[in-house]
Length: 155
Image (tube, rainbow, N blue to C red; front, side, top):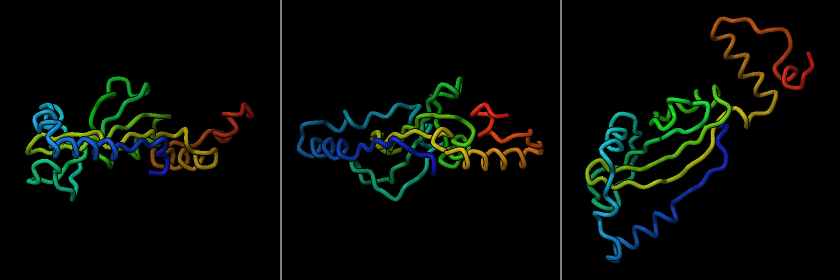
């Protein structure tokens, strides 16, 4: 996604946790504790992967994308399909995405990454193109003056 920024990858934390599980320092019941809500989100909103579950090795993992942000209001904290994120990124100024991997068989779950999305990452020219496409697709005509002129107070 073009506006993705401030990415935090939790793969090293995952690797350390799996090492502790294999060494017996952490029990599988402690890491296989996905809530029913998370399992349902994985079933209805998740994106299947080709990666096997590191605990049970029975099923492939599913990625669930949770969104948070001030502009989302009641939608904050909801799981969304991956295909919905670019549309939201062009609509909203900024929101946070948390990606959780889930095994629907054994309930393994782990935060894999988090990042920001939104229009704030676009420069003025890109923002003008996005707004032009959005207004053309909605059937509205653009007002006089570009959005960059409006932002800078030059009408």
